[in-house]
Amino acid sequence: MSVLIKGGLVVTSTGSYTADVYVEGDKIKQIGTNLEVKADEVVAAAGKYVLPGAIDPHTHLAMPFMGTYSQDDFESGTIAAACGGVTSVVDFDLQAKGESLLEAIERKKAIALGKAVIDFSFHPAVTDPRPEVIDELKKAIEEYGTPSFKVFMVYDFRVDDYTMIRLLEETNKYGGLVQVHAENVYMIQRMNEIFAEEGNLSPWYHAKSRANIAEEEAIERAGKMVEMTGSRIYIVHLSSLEGLRKVKKFRDRGIDVFAETCPQYLTLTEERYKEPDWNGAKYVMSPPLRSQNSLDELWRGLRGGDLQTVATDHCPFSFKGRKDMNGKDDYKVIPNGAPGIETLLMLLHTEGVVRGRITKERMVDVLSTGTARMFGLAEKGEVIVGKDADIVVFDPEQKFTITQSRLHMNVDYTPWEGWEMTGMPSVVYSRGKRVAEWSGDRMKFVGEIGRGKFVKREPFEGF
Image (cartoon, rainbow, N blue to C red; front, side):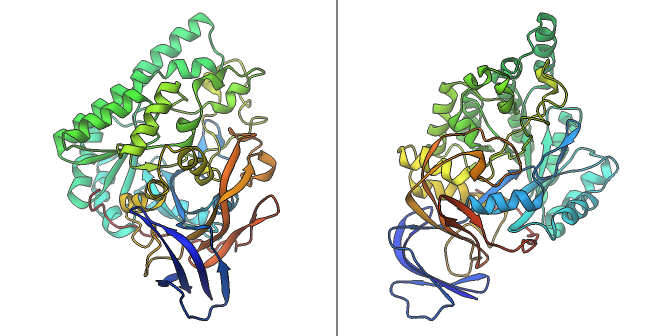
């Protein structure tokens, strides 16, 4: 199968130029002007962007949590991703008690293979850090193809500071990367107790219980451990201006504290928790939505390079039947998470590029090129000869109103219901095969169930 994409604006992280792109099989074979090659499929791309497919490095597909499972499995979740222009995901793989890292990876791989429509990899989440698991990190980095590891500073399966130090030491030796959910568990615990005593248990108090200072303190502590070990760390779903300032402080001193943020923290504020009829439960996620000041600061950080990537933390629970499964009387029992895998690219283009907050080249960097570099996806993230043909032909003028009924995620709401988008994919390719296309007033999945493959990633080489 061959594809010739003609006359589009190829957007890279460092610049843009008009060219033809020729794809043969899985790979990009030629890029040039007025290419004279025959192809099975020709796409007229004049007036459109040719983007590397977005990479979502933070998803929770078919994940057990708070007495239920996230509602997108690897079929529905990756179909939604493809329809949004996301062509690779790196999903979190929570280690079960007593499992080795390899057993956890193989268990999750069995769930994904035969269902995923785009390529995928895993971050093992170390939740049972026995000595033999620490010893296994070298194999995970060098042999299993999973060089990044998630740890939590909150929840019952959190790791203590000693374990964090050991993880940082071992990953530093072999080219691994520790990712951390950074919140101070004891600050949150005490605020939960206070609000319970006061009877303040509506969704608004979810945000108040997980105050900015809880994220700020945890990042400070994690950063000091990085400083001690000479290692590196990646803060997932950074949400607050205080947290961002801590990240910037460390990086200004040459300490490798990297960070991602998510579209929800760039577009939605904590006022959403006040929506009537318990609608605030739709936005119960951890960390919570923040103030407009944090939102503005995160855009500045994204534009200036203080944040390296944008991911979704896609973890969907339907408003009816899941968010309310434990009742509506206590924010602490609302399953934490929200859908977003399909709306990543459209939101960042509309709210970032169209509004002048970032350039289209910066968008490509934080959604594709920089993400591939951070997580060792050597064949992904750029429209250049030799890379996988994960390509989005993107119409920067196409209008689209986000509404749950026109999306593909297996959930009954979207946090951005009614938002007007400018810019949508026209055609999406995964390793040279068309997987989604614009059809009428929405995206349509046209790919093959199960074609997505597990991708072994390379050790961290610097950022």
